[in-house]
Length: 156
Image (cartoon, rainbow, N blue to C red; front, side):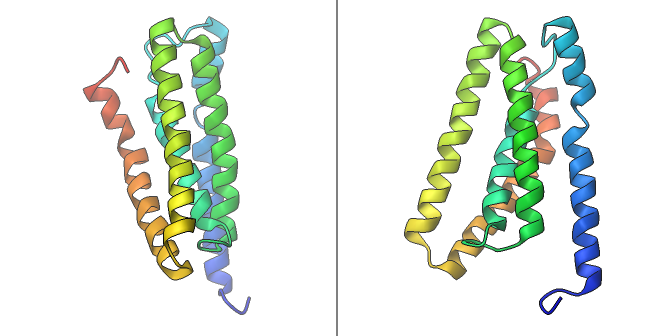
C-alpha cells in the first residue's frame, strides 16, 4: 500500500467488477445466436472494437508499459471474452459477414502487434507509457462509440 491508498485500490477493484459485468453482458445475445445458429441482424463490430480496446488497455497495464496490475488483469479477461464473442459471431455469420469479421479481426491483431512493436522499439519507458496511454484513451472512446456505428452502418 505504499504506492496506492486503500481508497484507490477499492476504486480499482470496483472498476474491475463493473468492467467484468460489461464484458459478460453480451452473453444473452450470444446464447440467442448459438440457439438460432444465426447472427440474424446483430452486428459484430462492437465486439471487435471492444477486443481492440481490451488489448491496448491490457498492454498499457503490463509492467513494461504502465504497470497497473488491475488494468492488465481485467482487460486480459475482457480480451478473452471479446475473442470468444468474435469467434462465435464468425462461426454463425453468413459468408459475406464472416469474411468482413475475419478481416476486421485480423486488422485488430495486426494493429495491436504494430502498437506493441512501435511502443517497444521507438519509445523510452516514460514516453511509451504516454503513447500507449493516449492510444488507450482513443480506443476507449472508439469502443463506447461503436454502438453508434451500428446505427449508421447496420449491416457491417
